[in-house]
Image (cartoon, rainbow, N blue to C red; front, top):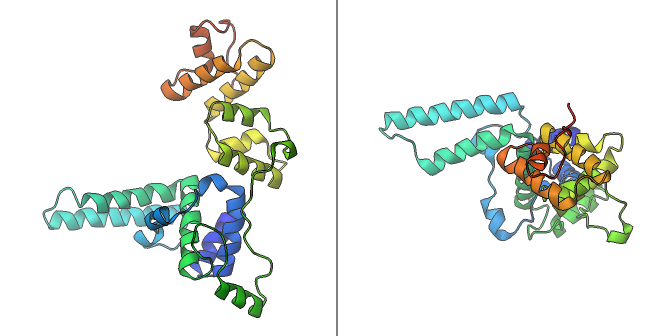
Length: 267
């Protein structure tokens, strides 16, 4: 994604203005990946890039290679010292870094929070849980005139009467509590930015459901529209699928809520 690459390149180059613009845009698109930052959560934000001795602009393959080297080195060092297993907390943090930075959404979440903390350390934003710029950075911005109109604005939910009706798939994801208000805001922002991309594609790319679960959601949409099942039955059957692996259609049939000749759509 272009915005992710821009954020990581700016971060690697210590370009505070570029980081600020990129973080703002990404946060508006993915508010679900950046929880509210408090003093307590800020203290727990770590820089996994630094831990793995890589810069934020490194590729996934480079990150994996660095992680493997660091993990192997740690095991060898501890073996020489007669320690087996290695220091638990330190080694687990290394494992966390390798796992998080290899997963696209986890890495982006890490980047948003890490970049926010970096902007605080650079004196760009105040670090009080808001996106307010420091007075010093505002003065610098005005004097250089290189960063115009980048005051971060945290997107606020619109009143219900101003919102367009959500796609049915999004409503079903909410009903089953697979996504919450933050994820809905993220989907609305992404749909506005890329109206040519199908909602189904956006949901799958966001990792909220698997392809199999998406097929079940589409089947549920059809069954609900035809009046063959109700919302409560759908919620129970979808819970069965996500918790025990039983397909939603099979759960509905096993519970006697759906005729046995109904099958999920194929890929």
